[in-house]
Image 1: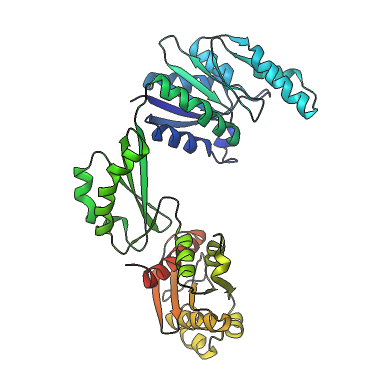
Image 2 (image 1 turned 120 degrees about the vertical axis):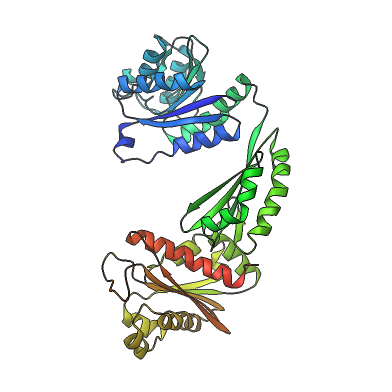
Length: 415
């Protein structure tokens, strides 16, 4: 199995001014097509450091893939660094130059001399055409047969080049016959340690497919990865293992692959012809935002009330003042009244409510920061959940949002 390393170039990445989306995209494509990713790196716009990173990576891997630093400006120096690492000179590629000239002619812009720099490629390099920009990609070769593939940093330019040219070349060069098929099972309401306990024996006994458990956003994913000749064969390998895991995690799996918790909930509510309303305090509208991000949410989601102030809880939701006085806004009694109130006021079949102390201030020994109460109500019942969450204000809000949607799933749709 061939081994590659990925180097993302750009000082803005090191300064945290830009999020690198290219590296995950490249890594996923490589893994899917049977190429091992041995390491990923970020390097600033410094010719010597880029060259050193490439040389070091080539000591470990069969090839290196870079993204970024192929533009016309003085700080774009990936090409020169690749030449330094491989001991190559640059040469003018007439085809690339003419392609750049056509782009400027078509757009009516004046071509500057520095744009000619983009047509200078390492000696003997294979061109990776760029239909979306002036920065041609290329594959340069080391004396021992190893390679460095360079692609632009603009994501849509890189993606087209990756899928249209680099991946097919890699598959042919290394005679890659197998692909990695992935199936991701999404769970809610069960801890990573409990999942591990329930499927620990499968980790030990399974080599193909392999299993990984990933915790994030207050929930967990179980990832199944099979190596096979094609996607159909991979899915066939995964199917019996998925069935076994689903039986052991019965009631906690809400979806798979691209499905989201909010998307699944909207689909189920529409199927059951139920309407939904939301009352939020500590989550500040995040629950409503997640729900309305789903296309078709208008078929079931009636609306929400961000009742941050107690006056709004009383006036908009009908929460009794005596409940607030006796138990406080962050309590099971008040969140129950919030859920019942928004359901009745908006005429919904089902309602979600949230209240809590997101911090960093406002906590007391009795009600510390991170205390959250959730409720789900329908005409027959109200179910509440108390949580003690940890982390920053944003983390508390995000986790409370996921937990609120998870509570709705647990009450109505977990089997």
